[in-house]
Length: 94
Image 1: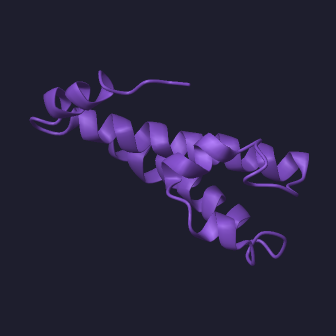
Image 2: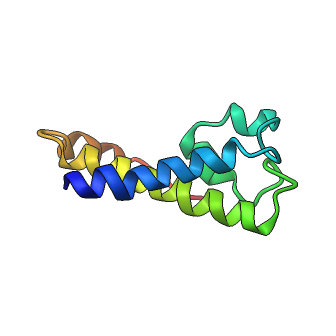
């Protein structure tokens, strides 16, 4: 678990920060003000425009990987799963 957290999840975070901090995206006010969940939801929409295909893929893969891992760690935490599962049941995808 420690390796998975310290290496695999950390790689998603590092790569996400790298693409968000790249010269092409560092001045994007929209990106700076989005939460991780909002960022993921808006990749490929007009809200986040002017991304290259490579940037879009990097954002989607690494933001998604970071979100998935963060969610996993919360579920694995002591007494974490039941509270988060209750929240999941109220989510409605559009």
